[in-house]
Length: 170
Image 1: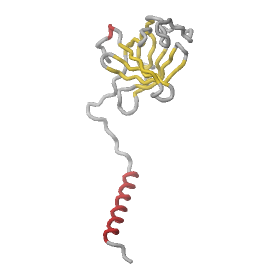
Image 2: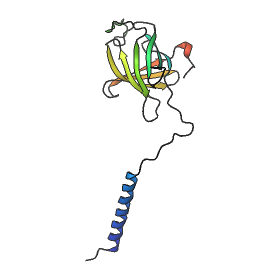
Image 3: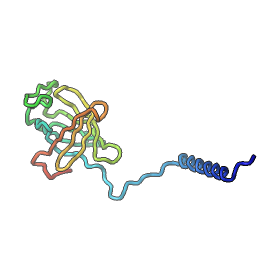
């Protein structure tokens, strides 16, 4: 019994498509060149006032001599308000002075070309370190999303530039 011409044609077409798919999978990936005029995401460099208004944090390269990670150090203490109990003074679990403390560390651009930076944030109120995503927002705002595990389980704060730095977006 001979297969019909239509069945033979379909089998041949299917085998040809399978062969071309295997060749494509075996080929080395093509280099992806950045689009003309493409730049790195807007870095959250400079000074920021925390949402609670307690601290002024300067975000800069962790190691000015090299590396691409950013860190955030406290450069000015403005108040001592609790973030977990609004209206109350903060009782820091970490007895070290806030001035000069590194709150943000290991910040690097997120993959995928977004403007987001990922790293860690230290909460001196409970002496714990969390994962953090920083997203520069307009005007002169920085969205700071701290979380445990996955970003779904977290909280977002809005940090703002000090009045003296308004308009100096870096």
